[in-house]
Amino acid sequence: MQITSNFDSGNIEVIDSSNPQRVLLAMRADLRSHHFQWFHFKVDGLTPGQRYGFSLTNAGESAYPRAWPGYNAVASYDQVNWFRVPSRFEAGALEFALEPGAAQVWFAYFEPYSRARHDWLIEQAVSRAGAELFATGKSVEGRDIQLLRVSRNPDAPRRIWIIAQQHPGEHMAEWFMEGVIERLQNRDDAELNRLLEHAELYLVPNMNPDGAFRGHLRTNAAGKDLNRAWQAASEAESPEVFFVQQQMRAVGVDLFLDIHGDEEIPHVFTAGCEGNPGYDKRLEQLESRFRNRLVAVGAEFQTAHGYPQDAPGQANTTLACNAVGLEFDCLSFTIEMPFKDHDDNPDPHTGWNGKRSKQLGKDVLSVAAAMVHELR
Ligand code: ZN
Image 1: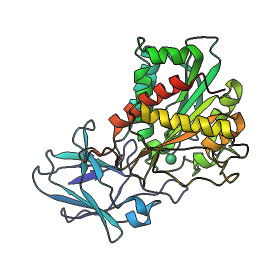
Image 2 (image 1 turned 90 degrees about the vertical axis):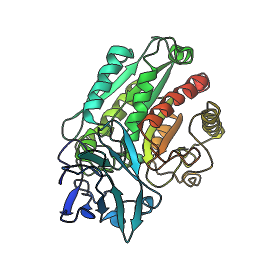
Image 3 (image 1 turned 45 degrees about the horizontal axis):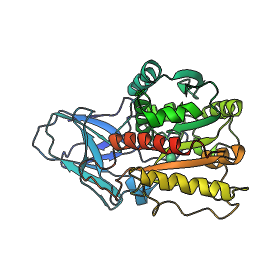
Image 4 (image 1 turned 120 degrees about the vertical axis):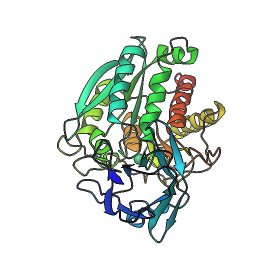
């Protein structure tokens, strides 16, 4: 049996593979950071039908140890179809076992969104969705951060921004963006045409390509959590945020959506700006209408579960959602999708996955279309 993780978004260390019934593994921490939770590795040389067991021995010391109970790892034989493998959290380790149907299998924390697929997505956006490459920033390690613009009416007054995967282990975020870009390819979509008559879209499909490539959970290559960098972004340590803020200040923002994944909570939910200074009735009503409409369009979404509300004036304005909402006095949300499942509509075979993330991206565009005239 060979175990490798020396590839895009790979992350695992082999401690002891001498017992195939219980291969001892550990997750590697992000570069210049103590965070870890993401794993992604390939096992080959397997005998189909034989049982193999794996133990992530340091799961209990990960960034979110409470994320493991109720979580099941994902696996794939072809890197296309991913399925859940029953897992259990025991004595600080995540344990799972499989009788593989093929000689090689990939395991991951969530269905990975590869850099190769990212490159394909950008190409699709430009060639088929009518997007233009509006600007390109650079990550700490020099990877491209593409900002796409979709502008079908030069007089459209509103600017809608959607950014994804600031937290590099949250691969569902770029799946969400793929849904957005896929829907934009249909020119007969009346809802979308109404939206684009009144708004330009600004899309950043991947905010943290270094972290994603390196198999990080939380930070960029300088060890910075980008979603805590929005009050003091620097070209040296958080150029990813610095770039996007510059672009936002140049064109304006009327609606901002920051796409994430949550390790612990088994539901899709949003976090808003209720703790921001200056948060008022207008913003409160916009938030409420956005959430209610997302339920009404039939999206996999709910409003009962989520983070505790910030007390008035107590928001952490280093977060993108709060910082952008404050600076541009606009409707601004963090959208969180689960690593586990959306328990309002569970699917034990796949859990929450790329396909469901894509559909949510499409559904959110319906809500943006319905609200585009109310944003100001
Ligand atoms: Zn996140």
